[in-house]
Structure formats: structure tokens, C-alpha cells
Amino acid sequence: DVKVTQSSRYLVKRTGEKVFLECVQDMDHENMFWYRQDPGLGLRLIYFSYDVKMKEKGDIPEGYSVSREKKERFSLILESASTNQTSMYLCASSLGGGLVSYEQYFGPGTRLTVT
Amino acid sequence: AQSVAQPEDQVNVAEGNPLTVKCTYSVSGNPYLFWYVQYPNRGLQFLLKYITGDNLVKGSYGFEAEFNKSQTSFHLKKPSALVSDSALYFCAVRDYDNTDKLIFGTGTRLQVFP
Image 1 (cartoon, rainbow over the protein chains, first blue to last red):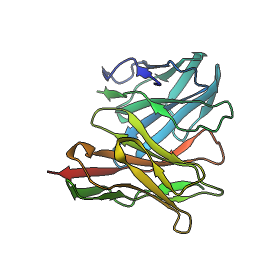
Image 2 (cartoon, each protein chain N blue to C red):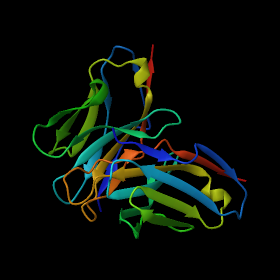
Image 3 (cartoon, rainbow over the protein chains, first blue to last red):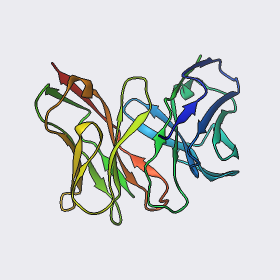
């Protein structure tokens, strides 16, 4: 089974802090994704990566950055946390590499509260 | 632009009755469609997908989905609902502009009453 783990289930940070959310997958997947989930808005893509050191902006990249130094690890960084970044953050991975298997596998999520 | 719509925010059904969670899509080519389920305080779990072939796709936990090209729909179904099926359900479609991305609907909350 694919396993995607996230470093924290719950996180409380103060406005202005730099926040790191870590995600690790153990299935050698090429693609990794960061989403935020808010009630009534579904999942919105923040950033994704299709290879080590490669990244692409999603729909709502403002206020976020990412890092992928190793294939299995994808980090989301909030440079200066703000209250409007309070949300559930979900990491996902998928096979990639041009193979016809597009389903994504998700971690358990990190509920971030910025006060 | 590609999109999926889940027209119902919530669906209520009695245990033992059949359930349907609706999804319609809009894509520029042949659609690749997915259903996911999210239990409280958990990540999304993959249920099933349609890529090609039989219009009726079977997935996990007794769920199935019917692809209807003329109605551009991909409704999730189960013949007999369980209380444990109560969860948030998301429909998704592959993004044709970037084929590794999925576009998700806003979700439908399914409530199964005993």
C-alpha cells in the first residue's frame, strides 16, 4: 500500500512565524502535491512537483513556497504565516512518469491554526 | 476550462437504502474521472476511477460509479447504504492541460441515518 505521511496532525502557530509542513511518501512516486482544504471550497492546489528540485505553481501559490530535495520528501513553507492561512493542508503523491495511473494518494492532513 | 461540479452539498439517506452522489464534468477530451472519500479528520482515500472501457466501474467498499458520456456525468452509487458510509465525497477529473493534475469538486457530505 502507498503510504503518505505528514509531520504533524495539528499545528498552532503565531502570525508572522515561518512554518514548515513536511510530507514523505514511500512508493517512489514521481509527483507530489500540496493542497489546502476549506469548507465549501473543496481542495485547492498550492504547488506540485513532478521531479526532484522541480516545482510548479498551482492555483493559490501566494504566501507559500515548496522544497523537494529528495524524491520522497516534499515540504510546504509558509514564509510568514497569516490568519487567512488557517486551514487543513493535504499532501498527495501519484505515480507520474507518463504512466497511465493518475490517481493521487493522500496523507492524513495537517490542521494548521494561525493565531 | 475543465471542471467538475457536485450539485449537492449534502445527501441524506436511510441505512439499507440505495445511495447516489452526483457529479458532472466538463473537459475538452475524453475524461479520466475519480471518486474519493474523506472520513472525519482524515486524508482522502481513493475509491475508484474511470479511464476507458465499461461504463460501470466498481470500487472499494461496495461503491460503483456510472459514466454517462451524453449527460457528462459520473455518479457514485451503492445499492445499500451503511451508517459507516457517512463521510465527505469528492469527484475529480484529470486536467488535460497538465495531465498529472486532478481538478476536484467541492465535495458532497453523505449522511446515512440508522
